[in-house]
Length: 171
Ligand code: S3P
Image 1 (cartoon, rainbow, N blue to C red):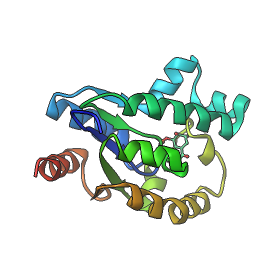
Image 2: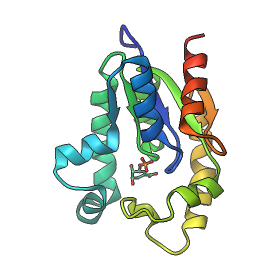
Image 3: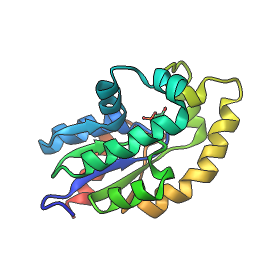
């Protein structure tokens, strides 16, 4: 664990990890890092390009490397990609690096929030609802096993979520 633990947001696509992470970092005067943005910056290409050219496995390798680097920082807020918990190594590295917060949302909310999205390769298909249901079944137990805190983000605004996180981590 770093001297000043990090605050790490995990959860599915459309849970609000980036928006909430940015607000939370501002609220606590901490630096904010978004794993997907960092991967894209380093690669000089967007996520659909990485999936096209390197496949999902190539993206996951980049993600594991980025998580290792971000988790080595101190006292920062980190937003991870929805699939970050798939690898056991990532789960361990994240847990060892600070307080892990699972931003829980429903598939119904995810469908609304990702409706017009073009930057998430795993959702560029007609059966998005079934894809998200399957992901929920596979990943919800992994998010729960990794997290110290679970916070719901459906049916409420990001500001209210941030207030709850601040209250619970400062306890
Ligand atoms: C993914 C989620 C995305 C991104 C990639 C894969 C996933 O991040 O990492 O498209 O497997 O759930 P967000 O959760 O920020 O959308």
